[in-house]
Image (cartoon, rainbow, N blue to C red):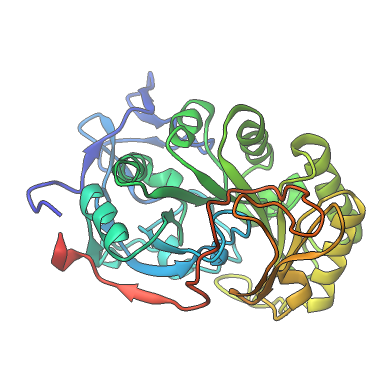
Length: 363
């Protein structure tokens, strides 16, 4: 990174209020701040009468992961992705599984650094097909994420957003103009859950999903973290997956992932694998062609099946690919049915390995 580049940069999505405060217009939270105050996300702040991003070029760490870990099962399968996040989040999920990063109120969490150009070059040097904004929500570091995506595109690297989808319309449109793929957390399918447990609202997330499907070419998949006693009823699985098929179509993959007790929700048990299997079954019955289980060992629930003939077309064991029955452009070798997704030649061979990397020494 160019050391002279400040981690504090101006932003565009805000306006002045009559009472002298500044309202951030990036996400539906609409934080209203006076000079020196930070938004709930922590990294956007009011300084000298404007909203600034305070974490530009800073990261909580970099790691090369399998793309399937995002999870994205239909986007360049088997390839490595350079993953990173910053600090903070614009949601307040009581069950946060990355709370040490997303709930951090300390800039010291941002122990590594990289300019957009250095990050793109590192991804290229490490043999990654894409860069993922993950661990915390890239919506809050909007400007940095877009600059990284542009730099990556210049060297043939794709950009992936792992997000809760909680963003206002205008910044949403700008952000996804530069993204190639996304995994969107649809945390539940009731307003009660969103308000009580995440201190946010359901509708903006649904708006993001509909926007992605009908107004962009971004490949996206959905993750639903299943929490015992909160969002694990047959009725909710039925309503969620019916909505997906009706509004997004049958080809959007849905991942049902297991919860483990964390952050402020340690009183709940781990999600039983049987619950995820039940959710997957309901999804398939409702017409979801690609339904998966996650965070549990389930080769059947990890694998991809042809919706034409039922053959296993991508066999997986956790994040390791154990079988491939597709042409280079994603057609079933048994019946020639097209599998939805982004395929570019033979699958990658990265497998399940995870490789932490440090970039600041090279920036």
